[in-house]
Image (cartoon, rainbow, N blue to C red; front, side, top):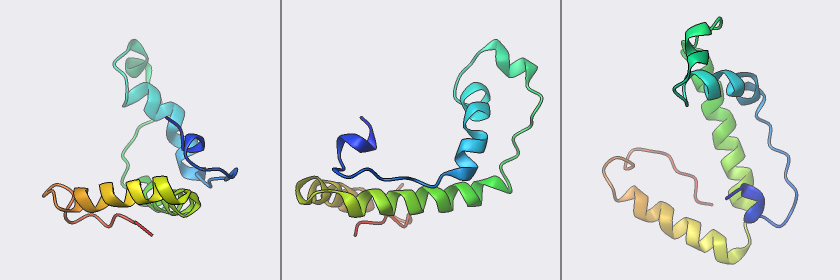
Length: 96
């Protein structure tokens, strides 16, 4: 499923830092393959992770706020449910 499967309007997401790192992460972090051994760009994440988090949070807010009422209510219910689970209890999950 993609975001466009849920929202009715065309939204442009600003994911500049993610787009810079996506091909690298796709090859080196998300898959096991021989490309990992030829890596020339290291991933420390210390400086990028905060920018990625900000981008993802802003993107989630844009997406969530654009949801039609029915899926928005379903997402909100699921977020509230997740907040009761210990592994998600401390997360700041935007729900409108």
